[in-house]
Structures are given as C-alpha cells and as structure tokens.
Image 1 (tube, one colour):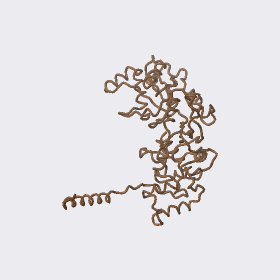
Image 2 (image 1 turned 135 degrees about the horizontal axis):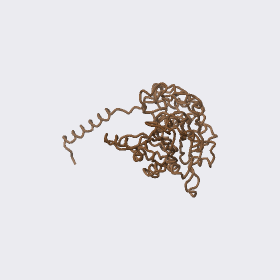
Image 3 (image 1 turned 90 degrees about the horizontal axis):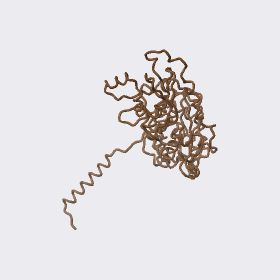
Image 4 (image 1 turned 60 degrees about the horizontal axis):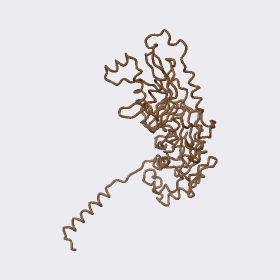
Length: 420
C-alpha cells in the first residue's frame, strides 16, 4: 500500500507536535527539607515516609478500636492484661471523682446558677466520623451528640432557637477535639440545661441510639456548674497503634535494623559515594530539589527498631517545648509563641500484639504501641510525631533528633502525618 505525500506530511507533523508537547511538559520537582546532619542520605523523603506509613494492615487496628469502643476488648488486652505500660482505664474514672456535685452549690440559686450541668463520658470509633468538631455537611461526633440532646433543652432556649429558625440542639463542651479518624476512649464532655426533670439514664439512652456501635456512653453524672471539661482536664492521653506487615522484624531489643545494602552505623561516606555514582559531584548537593527518589530509595532502610523509637520519644518527657514543626493545618495566629507549646509527661513506645476477639483466630498481629500523655496536643501533632520518630529511628538518628527538629525552619523537616 502506497501512502500519499499529503498523508505522510500530516503524520510527520503529528510526530513533531507530540515531541514538542513532551519536551514542554514540566518535570515534577519534589521539595525536600535540606537536612545537614549525617543521616541526610538514609533519611526517607516525605513520599517514602508516607508510603511506609500507609502500606500496612490498618483495618485490623480499626477493628480493634471498634471492639474497644463497644466494650468487647480493652487496651490492657494488648499486653495480656498487664497495665504497667499503659495507664489503667480506672485511673481516668477515679480522676473524674473530683468533679462530683458539691452539696448545696446549686440550692436556692437563680438565673444561670440554677442550671444543671451533666458530665458525659463516652467512647467513639474515629473511622466512622469526620472528627469531633461540628461542621456543616460533615458527619461529626459533636453534631450527632448535640442533636441527640435536643430533647433536653429547656423551653426558653428551645423557643429562642426556633425563633432563629435553627435546629433545637444541645450545646456540648469537650475536653479535647479529635481529628478525623481518631478514636476516643472515655472522652469527657459536658451539657447543661435549666430543666429539673432530666434523668441521666435518658441522656445516656439518647446518645447511644444516635449511632449504635460507633458511639457508646460510659457514664453520665450531674456535676458542679463550675466544671468545664477543657479547663478542668489535668492531662490528655493519646495511644497510637502502628501495625507491622507480615515478615517484618521489629525486635525491641535490637538496634537499628536495615536492609543488607544499608550502612546504619554512621558510615555515611560510603552512602555518599553510591549517590555520586548515580548523579555525579555537580548534582549531589542539589539532590533535595530533584526527582531523585527512585534512585535514592535503593540505599535507604526499610525497617526500624521499636526500642530506638522509644529512646527518641523519651527525650521529650518533662519538657515544655514548642511543637509547631510537628503540627499541621493550624491557623497563622497559633504557629508561634505559647499556643505551640506542650508539656509531655509521658512518651514511650513498646511492642505488643492485637488481642483477638475470637479465640480461634490464633496469635494477634504484632504492633508498636506509642503512648503520649501531655497537657495538650496540637492539630495532627501525634500523627506527625509518630511518623517522624519512625523515620528518624530507621535512619539511625541520634537520641536528640526530635529535639533538634524543633529548631527547623520549615515543617517539611518532619514527616507527613501518618494514619491511625
């Protein structure tokens, strides 16, 4: 078959146009923080850290959380019933005794002092909600709880809400807002009303019926009007469970565990030579600005030691520090000064196994449990802190690596937030 010169010319023009478009397509550039410490080369990039954190059997962790929320399992079951590693759940309930109603405080009172305040302790499954804080169009815990309490609002307030043409709902204050996907166990919140005929059991039933299996009330009690869940809280407690994939080694007693082609003992000169073989001397200093991830990933560790993560986290205990580098999506006004400071009382990591709800399921999944107790936490701070600790442990960073990262000039210095 003989093609005409006109067809050949059109085909040639298409090839030229395609070639020009390919050359004009901008090459994707990855921006990485320019770390200057000896672990610069074995440290994961943001993309590598993200992939490492998310490529895991998270569904098993979510199922465990669901069983804990519904009372079928407990956190202490992670350690065979021992409570030496995690705070005993009973401690939380005991601490709440300080908020019991003071005898005679609300007697013969009028106005705002005549209102009755109820403390509500509840648990909810984070994977079923878009976080705690009420937001239009989203399925949030606060939105559901306040909607369920609408029947307990006093007549005067109910009429005011109707006049404003807004739903008749209760107003709930919480000890600490949780992000999307975060499960809460024994979260403390409060609700007040001027009605005198409210039964605590009715409040419990109303909340339990709004999302069965995803929200469960632990207790409801009448407390002093001066009680405030946020300001009365002495500490907040986060428990992060990181699952290991099948075949991964994570011996707590071992040191930095790396692949066979990794040097994790500080001999970074050899790693630099490997990079030079790929890029040349003229490009090695600009590695953080180029899309070199695929070439560099071959010389980076893919394992870490739980004991090393524990050592890194323990350096944070007993210090008032600014965690602005470990926060995400915060307002500009809360990125400097006291709003970024947190005091961590307890920061540890250890190995455990997820308990099986069905006894015949065999041995549970091996996990790393990170426990953090502090006076407050910033937005996504826990997720970033855990992901960064794992990244630094894998890279063989020094014990004070997390402390040094707090002096960084950009949040790219820390790892992207992992899931939970």
